Image 1 (cartoon, rainbow, N blue to C red):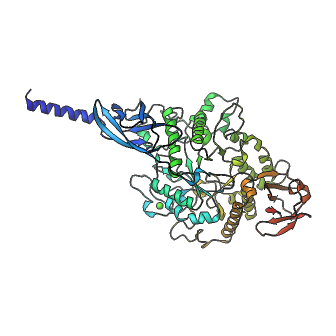
Image 2 (image 1 turned 180 degrees about the vertical axis):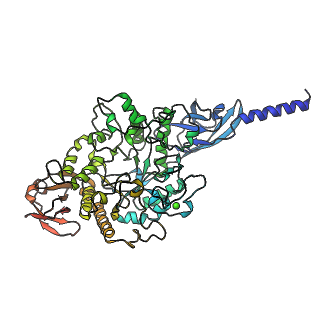
Image 3 (image 1 turned 180 degrees about the horizontal axis):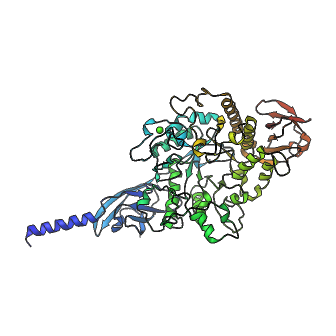
Length: 613
Ligand code: CA
């Protein structure tokens, strides 16, 4: 072969080789990490066409790659890193084909930032404000539609995207603070690149990216900083159970078992009881956790160790990056329970101060208590999640206020629900609510009766637990059970809205009354040690009246609930075990003082909150 022919031959060889070799790294996740976690292990997911042909290596750092995993798809590598030198730094991950360096990536271990919520997480002195970001306030019209994200803006459709965003929340933090809320839980804000129903956020299509129609990762961080200045924590809604069908993994799943029922769609039976039921078949138990929530929400297989590690690290990443004050975990019991145990233990080890809660939408206390840390379980199972949402109390509240007093109905439903709190690991640490983003609004559940609405909220805001108020409940928004309809736009969040809650403009009498009531109650609650730190003591319903106390040291609050149609006299003598020799009861709204030496008249359809002096 002549010299020139040889040259051409080798040039061709290089071209063929280089075409087959990976050209770029499309993703490394987590995109960066922090130095100084208790665990010195980190598993990176590396994605790029044919990346598995390359051999990764780290030089010039004590950080080493302990193991490289090839998986079913040739386009992924999983790297087990050992962070021997666990200090902030940037190191180079090199990717070799034979001895030739083909690709390189600088990976950063950041310094962990100090944060207010390192010391103080969510606790019973707090009240959470739950916001559906698409429906609260549109602070940036320019992001209502974004190239590359399928669903466009459609405010006319109750199920469409309405344009609300993180900027809208930042713009209205003063309102949230002034109302007396102390944490903001946002329904999920991560990318949901789905053709429809993307506004609610529960179909994650990228675990490391805020949906651009809400803003950006940086703006989310800014929200957290601005909120912290006002003493407000940020609670992240986290979906571990499933992804959205538009997730970037779906075109190229890393392994054959990345999803449950990966080859054929099978829906969950949605029956929580199967977790506990001694008579049910294994197939039905498995169907509950392994079936898909709905067809557009593929079910993640957390028994796969790469999936498990990915979800644990993504959780840690957001807690650290945003300085979250708490996490709310969606559809907690639908997730593989062994994984939940590992996940929750790990999160509590790395963030010991963090109080976070799970959702188990079921009204039977034993089926909720099972999941909370500290519960005595029938099978020795341990989940380390410190808190759960209190669905059983919400149900008792609604049925209790809507039914007639009898031995098994009426206001006693609330007494009876709370009397079963012995099943919980820590009943004071349950997240309580009168309504939420998935159910009819409390004002409507109470038949749009202002008295009942006030009673429901007075009880939720004074009994044990950490209350959560759904945006709009503070102005007694009404709704049907329809999701799009109960997640209505918050008045004032959009330009040219005819009423504006933030600036008290155009509200009707009901809305103004509800807002004043809520603002007064929340701000009083903030100052009450009895509510924030106190024990609950209650009495069996007597003569139709339900009376309970919260007390902390010398601070005593008494709540007397009369859901009858007539006035009732409350005899303080009956409660002398708690009241002792104290003389006065001051009603917190009117500030009227009542003598505890004589009977106090309790008006029909009222929950009266008294400071005992
Ligand atoms: Ca917007």
